[in-house]
Image (spheres, helix red, strand yellow):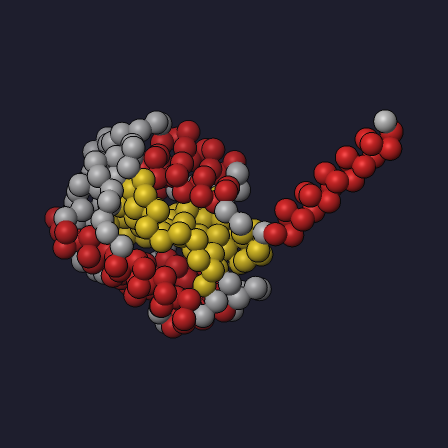
Length: 247
């Protein structure tokens, strides 16, 4: 019996070691969680998709990826709507250079629109966190990048989703998309960026960026990706992200 027990223990240790080795090491595991809800019209939807596709192939973004310790970023793109509508549009890809980025961008541009309903940010965080937990990568950082033009409306409490993700070592950053004239307010009537700063972002040095008349969506995404991948502002830019204390 002792021999069998030792054999079983050795087999378990070996299997755990093999499983650990099977995980590919990357600089960042990044889920791009974009608002695909009913508040996004077809023109805005195309601008959003194109903004992400252009940003992922941008030379400065690629330079940030290649400049990491491993020169690799594992990225997935999801879109979210109501509490029961979260969808993987481009599944995990490891970006190591222009060819990988071009493939990612083409898949993003050509995938159909599927999200429905209205604004469950908590559902988006839960879905994105599960993608990070269940993937085959081990990143030096783990990030959920939430973009949206409206507040939390449905689904389980946003605070619980955020707290559980942060407890797993995930940082949540946000991009607030403001419509002309100020756009949608937060749930208590506060500016939308205040809602995202207080209720959405969390983890290690999280931040909010606002896309509006002064900063286009495409430019905001490019800056945000470079901050998330390289931890620095894009070349030639001043400090523009609104940070919050670690949660």
